[in-house]
Length: 117
Length: 110
Image (cartoon, rainbow over all chains, first blue to last red):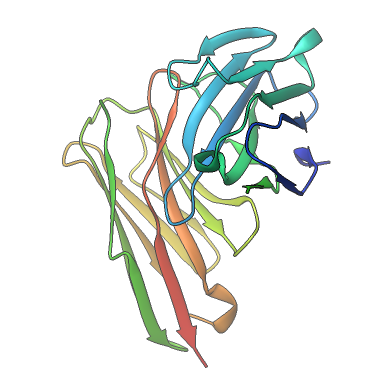
């Protein structure tokens, strides 16, 4: 079974530039998550999709971050314009179904390491 | 709001030793708890998933326990090996989110 695919693996940009990350979840997984992991910290949820609908985006800095999941499969996360504090690893994860009773295991991609200079 | 704490933040042990990593959470209304391993520069690898109705799960040299009422989970690693060196993260699953701890960085010394 193929895992969660993310690209690119690494990205270096200057502040105020824009950047986009791509995620392809495991086939059949309805739930897709984007997490931000700053060095030395645990991952923090940015946005969660159930199929192509947003379940939770309460911690997404909407003035600069946006995400979409067209057709309920692949997803892109965009930052525009980037700030120095956005330097982090951006992790995509997927699971068969949503949190709650009967919630299933989450699988993570390799992540995209973003450096903003 | 759920808060997840992992103690210790870092741990070094000699090869062959058994060890325990701790995870505590403030809101016991969880549906499951998952332990992950993260190698430097890599994503998260799922190790064990414990449903809220379960007390423990085992996979090879790993055993995870869950005491939902006291808000605690432990990850027991038997006969540690240098290849076990990594950061171990626990995550609790609530209504629609995974809340992560900050992890324990484990170093197994040959």
